[in-house]
Length: 94
Ligand SMILES: [Zn+2]
Ligand SMILES: [Zn+2]
Image 1 (cartoon, protein in one colour):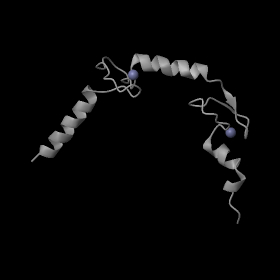
Image 2 (cartoon, rainbow, N blue to C red):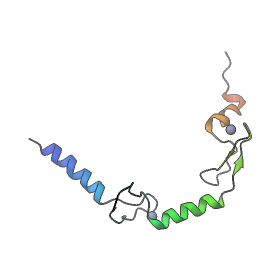
Image 3 (cartoon, helix red, strand yellow):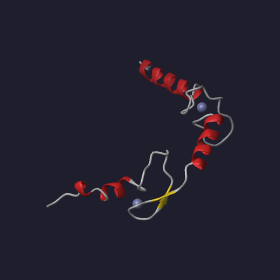
Image 4 (cartoon, helix red, strand yellow):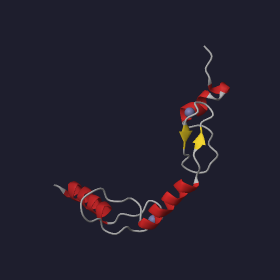
């Protein structure tokens, strides 16, 4: 009767126990203690932090807000909204 539920629970437990790093897909050590379990391993977390430090903050060409691009991908605007506003072809004529 509860075979379906058992399977869902088993999958859930497996997900909880065998978590993998979002960065390198390596299995993470079992989470211990209170607080949020980490999604990435320590090495990937350090790498992320380093990348964030290496990427200089930019100034949005549209609204002038300073922002940090997620990756060094040459983004010129702080948000999709600003990017769209700066594209004349995107503006709809009524
Ligand atoms: Zn990792
Ligand atoms: Zn902007």
